[in-house]
Image: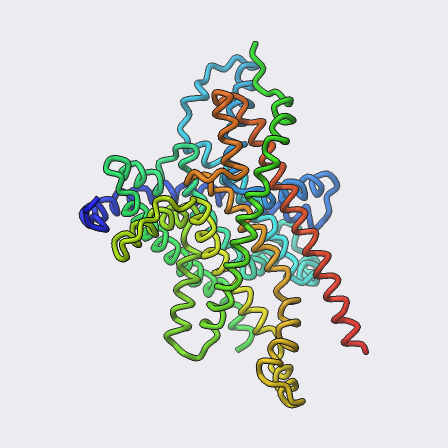
Length: 239
Length: 236
C-alpha cells in the first residue's frame, strides 16, 4: 500500500460519526448512575449497619463485580438475562419478543449492575468519614432518621465521595465502549462500522480516542466545579 | 425441550481453559514489569521541578486515564505498524499480537503506577532523607536503603489494585485476535455453534473472580506483615 499514513478526509468525517455516538454513551452513563446511586447507597448503609442477610449478599455481589472484568460481566448478563426473562414471560403467558429488545435496555441493566457495586464501596468509605456524633446530634435535636440522613449525613458524605464518584463516572463512560458486545450504537461501534468500508481503522480509533478524551476531561472539570460548590460549608467553617 | 443451561459444559470447559490461564497471567506479568519501570520514569518526571517534564507526565497520565482499554489496544495494534512502516520502512505485520497486548497494558499500567509511586514517595517524610544523608549515606544510598523500602510498604495496597485491574483489562486482548483465556473461551463457543455460551462465560468469570480474590488476599497479608514491622520500629 502506498497510500498516505493517515486519510485526513476520513479522519474528519468519522470524527463526527464518533461524536454522534456521544448521546447514547452519556444516556447509558446517566441512567446507570441514577439507578446505581440509590442501590449503592442503601447497600452501603446495610454494610455499615450490618443488616444480617443483605450484608452478606452485598459482600459477595461487590466481590464478584470487582473480581471479574466488565466484558465478562457483559457476556454473562447478556446471555443470562434473556433466559431469565423468557422463563418469566413463558410462565405468565406474556407475549413479548425478548430477542428484539433494544440493546439500550440491556446496557442500562448491565452497567447499573456494575456501577451499583462500585458505588457501594465509594459510599461505604464516604459514610465512614462522617463522624458518628453527627447522627447522634441530629437525633438529639429531634430529627427523624430519614431527616437526619437527608439533611446532615448525606450532604457531608457527598463531599468526601465526590473524587471517587468522579473516577466511577469516568470508568463508566469508558466502559460504555464495550457496548459493541451487545451491539449498542455508541461511540466506538459507530466509528468502527464507518471504518469497515475502507479499512480505515487507525483513523477511526484516533477519532474515538479524541472523543473520549474530550468527554473525560469535560466530566472531570464538571466534577471539580461541583465538588467546590458542595464543600462551600467547609470554607465558611474555616473562615 | 432443549436444555438451555447445562452445567456439564462448565465442567468440561474448565480443564480446556486452564492452560490458557498461564498466557493471561504471563501477559499481565510482563505488563506489570514494563509498566512499573515506565511508571517509575513518569513519576520521576512528574515530581521533577522542570515544568516541561511534569507537564509531559501529567498529560500522559490524563490521556491514559481517559482512554478506554479497548481503544488504546486498537490504537497500538493498528497505529504502531502503520507508523513504523510509514516513517521507518519497517514492516511489523508478522509481529505476534501478544507483543501489542503487552505494549498496550504496559502503557496503561505505567500511568497507574506513576500515581502510585508518586503518592508513596510523597508520603515519606523529608526528614528521612535528610537524616540518611546526615549520617553519611550518599543520595543514591539513602534512596535505595531508606526511602525505597518505606515507600514500597505505602505503595503495596495500590499496587495490588493495579495488578487486579491490569489482569481484568487484559480480558480485552481477545479483540485483536490474541488467544488467551478469553480468546480460547470464544473459540470453544464457536466450536459449539454458539450454544452454551453462558456456561463458558461463567467458567471465565469464576477464573477471574478466584484470581482477583487471591491477589487481594495476598496483598492484604503482605501489607499486614510489613506494617507489623513498622509498629515495632516505632515502639522500640
